[in-house]
Image (cartoon, rainbow, N blue to C red):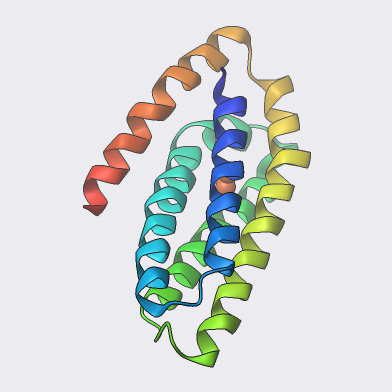
Amino acid sequence: MDIFDLLEQEHRGIIALIEKLEKTAQPEQRVVLVRELELLVVPHARAEQGSMYPFLKRRDKMLGEVVEAEAEHELAEHLLHDLSTCDPASEIWNDKFHALKDHLVQHFKLEETSLFVAARKILDTNETTMLSEQLPRAKEGFLKGMR
Ligand SMILES: [Fe+2]
Ligand SMILES: [Fe+2]
């Protein structure tokens, strides 16, 4: 499994958790799942930024899109934080949850239909292997920092 398969598999895992959260009305359970979501999304995004994105940034053609994707990561973390500090029994929680869901769905689409497609062409076999090995370690490091 290479870095692209790993990242896309993580996207699927994040979406599955979002769908679970969407069906959860119980406030205590919402809190638990939002924290779980944070622990999936934040290390995922930071590891992308520390591994694949720098390779893409070196290509002038890709720079704009990578900068946009980095801004989307920042917004995702902001929306997650906002949701985690919101009363899970309130009506506004639903609005915040849907804002986060829509944002992540749209971001994953940008990555899978554009950034990853470009990166598959840009990275050679050695670089892909190196990044595929680095990714789990990078994620683990970010995860430790969050606990
Ligand atoms: Fe991302
Ligand atoms: Fe991603």
